[in-house]
Length: 139
Image 1: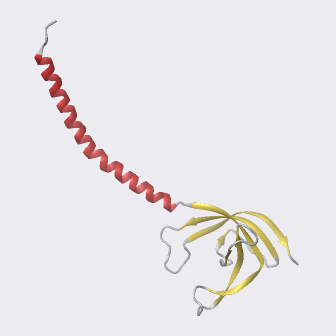
Image 2 (image 1 turned 90 degrees about the vertical axis):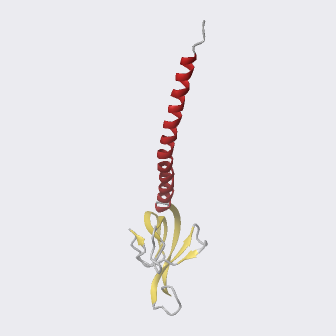
């Protein structure tokens, strides 16, 4: 069988053309892939959500909003995770879907969602009631 140099030359030209078109495709697609990765990573932070069990006391406390000179406002006394766990003091109205009644101890499941752009002097998360696990009268 005789070797045909024209066939090899045509194959090299085809390969060169394919290589050129692949470079063009990569130049077009690579930035798009980069932008998709960038925006998808930003979206994950927006919807970051966690669930916690909160133990709510039967009494509220009058506390300043942020600074000691602020006027006193009524806050819930909440232990996070267990009855003697870390304390937090959310407003009575801060837990969406939860109606607090004085004289009852609660054990509730809450969903905490980070806010993407919180106000400088406001809360940085949204708290909503998932389920009231127990409600016990202390009277």
